[in-house]
Amino acid sequence: MSPESMPTLLAVPSQPSPSADCTDARDLCEQIYQWTGWDWLASGSYYLLIKPLRIVLIILIAVLIRFLIHRLISRVARSAATPGPGIAALRPLRNRLPAAPPNNGVSERRRARAEALGSILRSIASAVVFGVAFMLVLDELGVNLAPILAGAGILGLAIGFGAQNLVRDFLSGLFMLFEDQYGVGDLVAIGEVEGTVEAVGLRITTVRDATGTVWYIRNGEIQKLANKSQGWALVMVDIPIGFTKIDDAVEVLQRAAIDWAESEEWKPDVIEAPEVVGVEEVTTDGAVVRTTVKTPAEAQWRAARELRRRLTEALAEAGIAEKITEAGVHVQPATDGSGPTDPPPAAPAPAAPAGPPINPNAVQLGISTAIQRHLDPPAGP
Image (cartoon, rainbow, N blue to C red; front, side, top):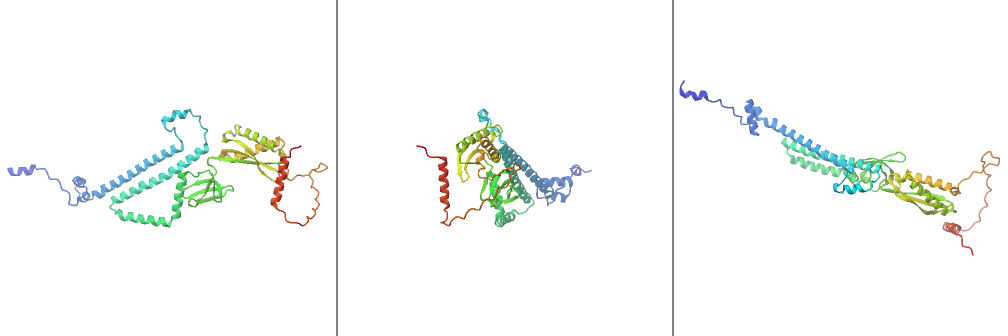
């Protein structure tokens, strides 16, 4: 063996070189070609490995971001539903204050509103995150995004003009939730509909009235809304009495109302002490005395019913209640004790002589004057 052939025998075999098609991700392409020796696999490694890995990575990052945002929104919603201790520096001062009685109605309303807003924010966050991820995936696939964005803008304008009512309903519902105009369980009056709110959505509000009828009201059509369940309510109880013993009746009503407000059962439902404001109206049947008391909105109707019952019982015990039915229908007892009998038919009244028409205002003035003279008799000599 000649010395010239020795370098050839001892030389390390040369490594195969990748094909000329290996242009993208050259390091990986060369590595795959060195491992396999397959030119088609090395040249297509960018589209078979790099692109899918990037797409999977985009999706995983989007899912992770969505999870973190949802968790943050849920935490904020829970904090809004159940108020925490607040600022730590003010906690000692707050602990010295008397504890306020729990208001289950307000807490439930706050919790429902926080859940509704949290659900909306989570939906918006999911749409934004997955929308951006979808655009990034299209960019990885080599899709030109400019025509897509332009077409989406034109489509958005067309939808905005063609579905103005739908957009208005959604925007109105969103602002109603943020402004806390009403919530589930509130007693509201929307136009001619009055009832209890059963569901609040971005587009539709469901209200059930006193007869059980369910009304579906589009949020964009709500122009005026009266909420009878927020804050406090003023209970007004009108009790009719006769023209006599008015001062005694006012005193009895005031004492009965105070006793009711200070009872253990109803004391939590009274914001301010009840007050007998006096004679509210005078009719031909008697005077109407009004009693008012301020209560929480959710306790208005049950407080009014109980207060009316207490006042009526107090008047009956004081011997003033018979004046209430003074103008009512009375049953004439039977002479033999067998039971009530029908009264004899009344004789026909003589025909009134013809004369000028009666002025209602003059009649009302005469009645008021007679009542005033009865209530305030002139002093004797």
